[in-house]
Amino acid sequence: FPPRRSSDLSGPVFTEIQANPAAGVPEWVEIEGQAGHDLSKWTLDDGSIFRRIPNGTGIPAGGVLVLSRDCVALRTAWSGASIPCATPEGWNQLSVDSDAVVLRDSTGVKMDSVRWNHRSWGDWPAGRSRERISALVPSEDPASWVASTAPGGTPGWIPAAVSPGLSGLSVSPERRVVVPGNENRIDLSAPAGQRVVLELYDLSRRRIAVLWN
Image (tube, rainbow, N blue to C red; front, top):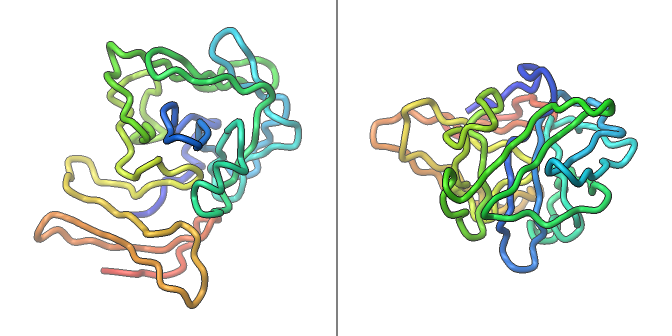
């Protein structure tokens, strides 16, 4: 399941939101864009309160950046994983009932936005994030977002791409941190008779190995 190509995007967009994390885990939003894209003087807002992204922040080699009020606590919650993360100035708590996140560039132009409410989105799943099914689908459409199958969500990395119409597929690594010489269990399930190819990529999108075919 090859990762999405950030080069397909015209600019950074939201790809995952965690507004209802488990106790002790900070809220976060994830954006995806072309590696090296400078986010200095960009802002994250809810339509009224603007939170400035620190100068010098850019999209890392993996093409994904997480914004959170506490990057250290976020990494700790994922066993010390090196999640690419930045903290906007003055983070405000997200609401699971009705809220919005808007990403604006250094000139104030809106690059992407997501607005949700209980009536159109339903209950926010406890402890789980909402993932955009593709960075190329409309962000304001509730149908573009699904509850993460991974507890807590997948901050800082892109989940497996699932072919349209294919259901019953899940890929879940035991740990995101990979230590050479140590085993890391990967739970994989797929419909009977479905061909599955599991590939390993590094953060620059280079294929390192075919783990299963």
